[in-house]
Length: 123
Image (cartoon, rainbow, N blue to C red):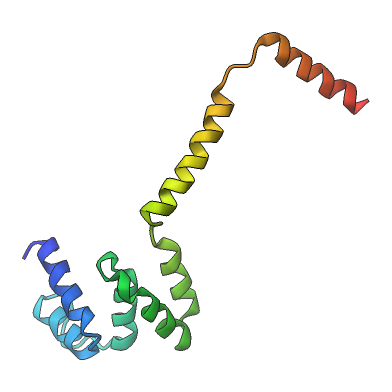
């Protein structure tokens, strides 16, 4: 099975929020063995929180992780989330304006004058 297909199926199973179903799916796909005994509920919520396709469940996953003592994990996952298109556009807009100002050439006479004023102001 190709990764995109596996990921889509895993996300479908994760959406059920059934830890045993997630475990059985991962065993059936050869990702885990029968002997693996992780904290399935924690593992499931971590996978949900980290899946871009399950963004609508991220808040619920964050709440579960924090309420069960996994604050650090919740913060790491929250920090890895990509900003929305709207947030990216706003930050690029600001960066673009700033870089336009800083890339604008300053006439040599003004640059020399600014340096001299800075030296004069220190004295």
